[in-house]
Every structure is written in C-alpha cells, then in structure tokens.
Image 1 (cartoon, helix red, strand yellow):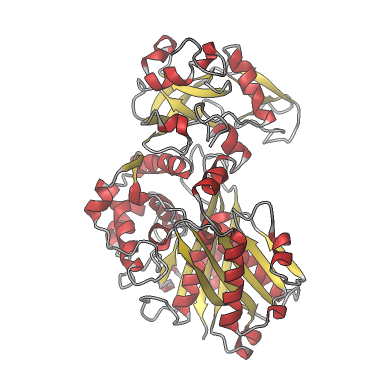
Image 2 (image 1 turned 90 degrees about the vertical axis):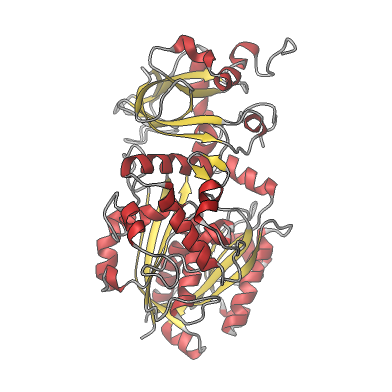
Length: 163
Length: 382
C-alpha cells in the first residue's frame, strides 16, 4: 500500500522525476540520449543503447499504437480498489518504447492509433494517458481519467473544496 | 565427474504464514538432510532464491542456519531460479568448488509482504507500472494474454484446457493447495480479475519451499540416493528487448542447442514442466522450446492432452496454478517434481515409464515482460 492510500502510488525514482517536471508544465517528455539520439522509457540513469549519461528530457509527439489492453477488476491499492473497473493499455510509441498507460474509455480495442499525453495524478506525479488522437478536449469524458488527473489542478492533497 | 540432481523436497505450502522465509529455508535444509542422510557439515555449497528474506540475503542465511560453506550464491531470478540454481550448482560441483550444493527456494506470504514485494519489485515497476492500477502481475499477464489471443487466435477454452488438466494432475499431489476438480465451465465463468484473465488464470501466492541437492554421481551412489542426469541446460536474460510486446522468450534462441547437446529430440520428451503463473506463458514456452511453431500454441493445445496419462503430460504436480506460487519456490516446483518423476518417487500419480523430462523456467516481470528464461533436459539414470 502507498503511504497515503487515498492517493494513487506516489513513489518514483529520482530518474523518473523529469517526467513529472515536464507534465507539470503540460508537456509529455521522455529522456533522449544526446550522443546516439535514442529515446527511452521507463526513465533510466543512462542511455539503454550507448550507455551515455547525457540524457535530456525532450518533447514527444506521443503518437503510437495501442497493442494490448486490460480492464482491472482487482487492485492491490485502495485508490484503485474504490474505482474499479479500471482500464489500462500498452502502447508502442512511434519510433520509441512501449509504455503502460491509463486508457481512455473512448479508445477502441487494439490495434488502434492513440495519442499519449502526460498528466499529474492525484499524488502529484506524472502518469501517461492514452486518448484518441486529437481528442484532448474529451479527456474528462472518462470518469476514472477525470479522477486521476483531478489533483493536477487541486494539489497533492486532493480536492480541497469539500468535493 | 558428472553432477547429478537428487533429494527433491517440498516444505508444505500454506496460503499465508506467520513464519518468515528463514523458517521455510530451515525446514527445507532439514528435510534435505533427512532425505540424504547427510550431516549438515557435509553441505559445503548453497544456492538460494527468495523474495521475502529481506533484509537478509543468502549470506545472512549461512549464519542463521549455521552452515560453513565454500561456495555461496544468491539468485534473484524468481521463476527461472530452479534452472539457474541447477546450472550454477552443477558447474560448482564439476569444477571442484563444492562437493554437495543445497539448492533452496523459500518464501513466506502475508497480505503485507506480498503487496510490499509487488509495489517495489523493481525500479521500472515502481515508476512505470504500479501507479497504473496496481494490478501486479495479473495486469502484466493480462496484456500478454490479450495480445496473444488477438494475434494467434487463442480462445479462452485453450487456456482453460491447460488449467483444467493441471488441476487433474494436482488431485493426487499432496502439496497442492487446490485439490478439488476444476471444470471448464468453472474456469470460463470465474470472476474477472484483469480482463481477459479470470480467477483460475491467476496463480495464488502462498508460502512454502522447494529444494534439491546437486552432487557428483559417485557421491549420490555412495549415499544410495536415486538421482537424475543433467543432459543439457540453457539460460537467457532480456532476450528480445526490441519486441514491442513479449511474444517469445530466450528459449527460442537456445532450443536447438539445448536438444542437440542433450542428444534427444522432442519426441523423446516424456513430460514438460513449464513455468505457469498464467497459462499464456505455458503456450509461449511450448512454442519457443520447439514443440510447435510460433502462434501454433492454440492448435497444439487442441491437438494434445496434458494430464499425467495424456499424450503430452504437462506440469505433473498440477503446477503453480493448482499448487500455489510459493514465491521463488514456484521457480523450483517444476524441477523438484521432474526429479521425482524420473526417480520413481512421485508423491502422487506418475507419468508411466518417464525417462526424459524438460523443465522450463521464466521469471521477473521487471517492466512489461519477463526477463529470465531457462530450460533443462533431465534423464533417468541409465
């Protein structure tokens, strides 16, 4: 269980904090190697290809293909237990790595094109969300997605005005 | 000098335990000594695997159990631990680094330890999987199953056939936690866990231990122990990193050499032990070990029968899906029961006339795929 079970898990490595720093500015960035240009995820301390430590967080278009999905009916964390069922996807980014995402309800079954974006979740850390390309304005149509990114506006303690 | 495997032991599983992993390790070592009639001082090597020994490692265990060793290994390889332990212990024996190596996997289980293990399983899990629903391995294998079904036309009934057959095998195996027959209907209609996975697709975590000894064939003979020969083994880690999703494992790289060095063909294999925390991974192993081609797993399942008396005996103890997953001991289960099957000491029903068995291991979903693969072909003593 996370330290604050009313929140999604907030533990991240130092390497992963760049994702959160960018998401706080509304940007989806991944580490890119300055020597060999490889883009990688999950975040690391070195380039997975050439082992250079010259990594820079760079803006990503986020286009990719949903290759697998699941809907959870069981979770080990209370935040999710209270919000089941919960939909997830596995997305292969164009020219890049495979990412685990919260999967928006408007996205059809794989294989299908999706757009990956980064948002802060209620714990104040970045999470990746896959939506239909160009449908960012429909993000809040999915109640689970709306809930998990709520704190992006409300702060890490969650909703402050009685809601 | 040839190293052999002997003295397979199991410390009875329980769903939860208030004992620590050290307790299960101690019980396993004590049972190894009982079975082999060896004094504790005769054990001069230890290869150990566990998820719940924290804050200790195998080093701490030497003092905890008061064993003085000249060869020690701690392998964090989960479902591949049995194969890897066998490989390393064999090298140690054949190089003269040790005379008797105890290979032990021991884990405890409580709701607390299991959740803690999952959430901090790896840095990648913590950063890039756990915050996404905290579904643990159920979610990871749901992705692999979803993809495999769509890509290769596998049906729920195909996975169900393996699960039902394994349950049949478990009915006579005394350590299995599930010993009630499972019907295909029950399998198909069980509650959803992580779509498309339902309850009986998912291994049940538990506490327990598995262990065996590796020593020279001469030593085993002197001790009057029945042993099995190691015909060949293989091991791979992070085998196909560029695949978008895991649809194959390292076995695919090694199977030809595995069989050629063993001097046997697929037709000679009397039973197969796959690592089976979820049925999809058994299909990948059947394919990648060469029993059928890639994507032919579903048809292979439809064409064969997997019970002990079937035409393709598979997971002779019922596997983890019926026995429970005692942490890293789940990676030993196929090995210990293979040794029993090949020495005529099966605890339940046996595969009639089994001479050669293949044991496969798979472990460690570090992020989106299992990283450790291994296999071993074992044979009854001539």
